[in-house]
Image (cartoon, rainbow, N blue to C red; front, top):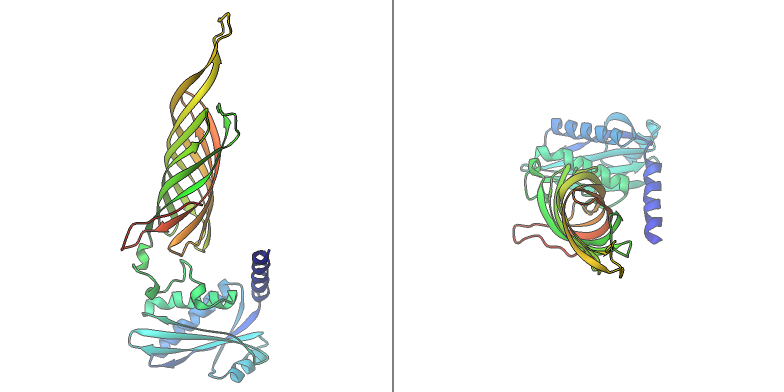
Length: 325
């Protein structure tokens, strides 16, 4: 309940902010040239407009809160955005201030760009922090991680994760089980890029006297967001090993003899589905998955699985690992 209220408050705050009129002032510079300040100002203008704000450009330069508040009032804006750039070798320290028209400061953020190329990500990070009302270190996404926070160049945003999920398989065609659900687990490995996820999975669902299922396959998913809450959807191919005890009676038996027949099927399978990948920018992921299976061949066996698990990103010091809960 408390988490729901917190999410509601954050969303309400965002809705109130977006659509406001801001006046964007010039950024002051120390040990860096004016052209860099012009680039930073343009990046802020573009990012704020993209986030839904109306932006009024002003050429004055402020270093005090009162000056910025006065600029907001003169432009009939709700708030003024200004800041400073400090050059330290190749690094540039960017500071952003947001001051309301009543001379009250609403936001202050500072982050260091490791290079000129890093400025785009620094500006995105500062604007995200302002919009969400969160500290800089809590607003990392795939889009705004700065150079000092990455261990590889941005043009190679891919890595491996490994882990496991547990859950239930719900067969609805071809099942011999007396139960409508089969508990089980899945072991998986993932290869993730900015927009795609390739998953290799082997699982077991059973713990039933009459039926057990071993799905094995590879799937490709499209990642639909670069945020920490990332939905995904895709399809896959594989094989399903199906073990069943089928209860059968001999039709011409006078005594009505009945017995269990032990059958084993190796069925090609198509899968489709999706889910949610949580904490995407962290070294571990929480995964909620919904998957449909269409197995065919010697027997048609159709089912749906619901599962939950954890995966951990591979590191240079050791392999990935995971425990499904």
